Structures are given as structure tokens and as C-alpha cells.
Image (tube, rainbow, N blue to C red; front, side, top):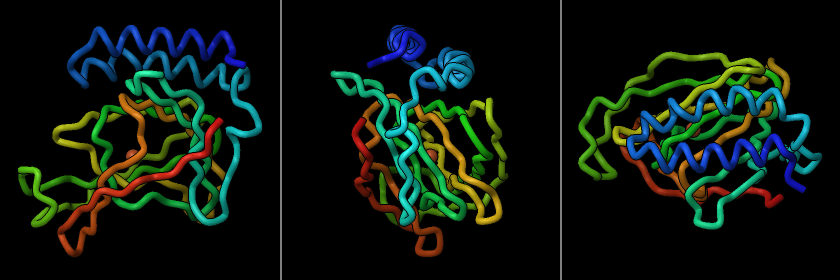
Length: 189
Ligand SMILES: [Fe+2]
């Protein structure tokens, strides 16, 4: 069953994302909704949204729009679990429910002409996001980063809203200067 807080979030997010054609305007309009949603997480997150996997961070689907224009996941990060270096092909808004989510950014130095080779990335800054924090990103040029939790910190849980079904993204091999598209799994609700 969908809680009133989640229902309100989804309906407002759908309206605001439709109204804002520009991704940067879209995340500006959606970030405050995520800030409020974090405080309501206890009303709609159920045990299946806290599923974890000792092999990898776990992506638990909370909501997906019938037209695939929005998707919301609860991601559970056990100590020592990290994403590969990746981008998103979409705008995204992230809110932290529990623990500290760490983000290590990369800056693309070579122009993106759509090729999967000759990609120069430089390491950028790190942000540490505690419960209540909201961050966001836009595509084109795409935001490239690694997120996760170092071994010495406890589990983190975060909510991720995207402007599409996030079932695939590019991962980067920084040393080889390449990227490739991979499918990413999730647990259904
Ligand atoms: Fe990401």
C-alpha cells in the first residue's frame, strides 16, 4: 500500500518534472520535495526496502511510473560497498535516510562526442551526506561519480529519484579511458 506521504511526493514530482523541461530546473524543483520525503520515510519504507546483499549494494524499487518517466529506489549500502565509476543518463535527486553516504566525483576533461573511448577523467571532490541531506545531478554533460560507504562506517540507506527507469548506465574505466553500458539489477517491491 502506498502511504499518503509517498503518494503526495510522487504526484508533485510528476507535475514538477513535467513542467520543467530543463533538467537543472527540474532538480531545483524536486530537491525540496526529497528533503520533506526523507522525514516521512518511516511512513512508507517497508522491510523489503531495506534488503541488502553481502555481494553488492542493493537497489530496492519503491515506485516506478507506468510511463517510465520517474523511478524511486531505496538503496542499501553495507560497509565497504561502492558503485563503479558511473554516470546516469538522467537527472537525479538523492536523499539520505540513514548513515553517511559518500560521493567521490570525477570531472570529465575531454569533450563528450558520444564515443566510448579516449575519455579523460580527473578525480574531483568528496561529499559526505548524512541523514537528511539531499543532493542532485543533471545529464549532458553527465555527472560522473562513485558512491558508497567505506568499511569503517556503518550501513547507509538512501532514496534515489530519477527521470527514467534506472536499469542501465555507463561505467567508466578511468585508466583505460573507456566506458561501456551495463544493465543494473534491482529488487522489485
Ligand atoms: Fe550515481
